[in-house]
Each structure stands twice: as structure tokens, then as C-alpha cells.
Amino acid sequence: MSTPKIIAVVFLSLLLALALFVFGFLFTMKMTALSASYVSSRIDSLPVASLVEEVEFDETIENNPELVNLIKSIITENEAELKERIGETIHIIYGYLNGKSEDLDMALVLKDTILDPDFTISIIEKADLTPLVKELVAEMVAEAELPYGLSTETHIDDIAQDLEPWLKEQTTAAIPSIYDYTLGFSQNTDIVIQLEPVKEILRSNLRQDFLDSPPPEFAGLSRTELEHKFDEIFNEFASDIQSAIEIDMELMDSDMPSDIAESLAEVEEALSESRIYVGYFNTVYGLLIGFIVLLIAAIILVYREVKGSSRILGGIFLGYGIVNLIAVSIARGIAKTKMTQLDDIPSSIQTWLLQFTTSSLTPLLILAVVLFITGAALLAISFFYKRNRPQTGTFE
Image (cartoon, rainbow, N blue to C red; front, side):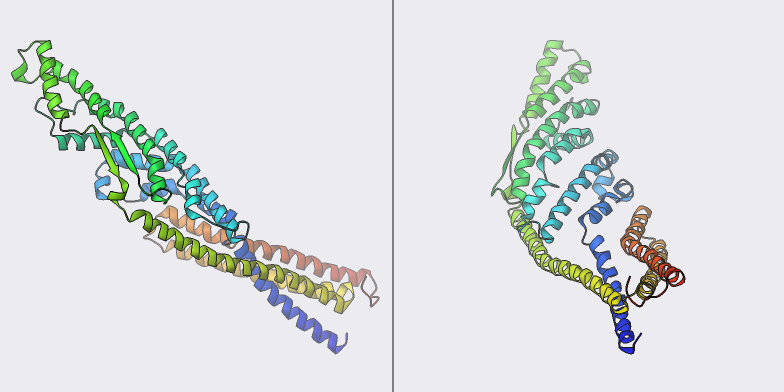
């Protein structure tokens, strides 16, 4: 081979090696950080159930074991669907970043996925809200000062069970309006919570207990007189409870919709800028693939024979595979060592982080293995071709 050809092959080989290393980095980015499927899979593998068990709640919640169990059960029972909806959100955002859609309305995206009222309503309808009802009844009775002779202690479980359908009904009716106001689809939200059913349920549960075990001073009264006495006492108590509660979301927090709208606008602006850079990335990624193909073709054309081109390409691919296999092994070892040193992070999250690091290097590992095998095969071809076929000087 003449000196100009040797110089050309060396130059093209160095360019090809450099292009392959750059491509390895871009390929890894393409298959991980810039892949909606990959990000969604990492969310799916997040150990939410274990994390919930290890998380510390606010002191006011922590002191109520039943309420803590309610929160944990709601999260764990709806974990799969919540992750699915987060995945839908991620795919919509990535579709916008990759130019599959022209506009992105984050408020509408959230309402169609994570903050879908129907999804929240389905969670509430499936949940056991009796622990929450107990808390509400205790607070309401404390504020209204239950009269002497009436007590909810022995009937609190029955009261909670009877009131649970009422609470679910009131909550599910209010959720669509709350979401629309929060996300800026409506300017004002007036929510009316009817309390008459609460009074009637309290009346029915307290009446029998009062009649069966009246206060000592009423022991001599007939049942009819006890019933009248109960009605008198309870009506006095019930008069201190409103028939309905009207909640004006705007009066409670008039800045909330504007704050959320501002935050969503900032997110949309950031995604709009990211979309430009993702477009540049995709362009460079495609051009680099074309450039690598041209370099391979150029090396083949310079040699114009199988033995030499197979040997040089096989050496480049094999070398790339070996270097990156070693690099991936070292990186995974370092990551494993670092994860074991994070004592302040729950063990379930440590495991997830280690899996995240390992999986993020998987595309590079696959590319290294493919090129390693391809390089070894090309080198084998060059040796067999040399031994079994005479050199003709032309590409065959």
C-alpha cells in the first residue's frame, strides 16, 4: 500500500474511532434521558410501597395510626395506575420535545392524566375513609360541645361507617370544581357541603344509646318522655351546627391559581427551549450515523480489498468494544460502592438508584458488545480470507 493510502487509512481510522466514541455517548443519551419509554420504566420500578413504609409523616398525622394506614393504603393500592398516568404525561411531554406535537398545554395535560378528576374520584370511592370520618366527627363534636348525656364514644365506629358514603359523595362532587379552579379553567369555585345528613346520622346513632342508658337524673322518665328529652337536647346541640358549609376557593387562597399558572408557564417555557436543543441533538445524531457510514465506506474504498478493510475495521470495532466494556464495568463498580455509602437514604431507594445507574449504562454496554462481536468477526474474516483466498489486489 502506498504512503498516501496509509496516511488516508490512519486518518480515517482515527476519525472513525472518535466518531464511534461520540456516538456511544449520544446513543446512551438517546436510549435513556431522551427516551420516554426508559424514563417511564424507571418510574415504574420505583419502590413506592417500600418508600411509603419508611417515610415519616407530619407529627399531627403520625399520632393517628389509622390515618397513617389510610394514606399508605391509598398510595399502595393505586400505585400501578398512578405510575401509568405519570407515564402518559412523560410520553406527551417527550412527544412535544421530539416535534410530534406543536403545542403543549401543561394544565390540560395534567387534567387528562395525573389530575384527572375521574381518577381521583375512583381512588376515593375505593378507599376506606372511616378513619378520616372519625377525625371529622371528633372535631365537629368538640367544636359544637356535645350536651351532657350524649356521647359518641360507644358509637363512633357506627357513626363513621354511616357517614362514609356522605363524605365520599361530598368529596367527589367537589373535586372537578376544585381541579378546574386550581388549574385555571374556572375563575371562582363555590363548594357547598351539606351537613343535614350528618345531623340525622348522629341523631339516629345517639338516640338508642340515650334511651337505653339515660343519665341518672332521667332514670325515672318514661320512654316517651326520654324521647322528648333527647329531641330537646339534641336539637339544642344541632342548632349550633350549620346546615351547610359554603367554601369560596377564591377567598381561601386567591393567589393559588395564578401561582400554579405561573409555575406551569415556566415549565412550558423551559420545555420550549429544551425542544430546540432536542431538535439539534436529533439532527447531530442522524448526521453522525451518516458520517460513520461514510467513514466505513471510505476505508473500504481506500483498501479496495476484503482482507485489509476487514482487518482495520475489525480492529477499530474490537478496540471500541473492549474499552467500553471495561469502562462500563468500572462505572458500575464505582456506582455500587457509592450506593452502599449512602446510609441516610432508605435501602429501597439505594437499590433503585443502583438499578437506575446500571440500566442507564445498558445501551452503551449493548453497543460495546455488538461492536466487539462485529470486530471479532471481521478480524476472523480477514485471517480466513488471507489463508484460503489469494489476494487479487481488487475488492471482491
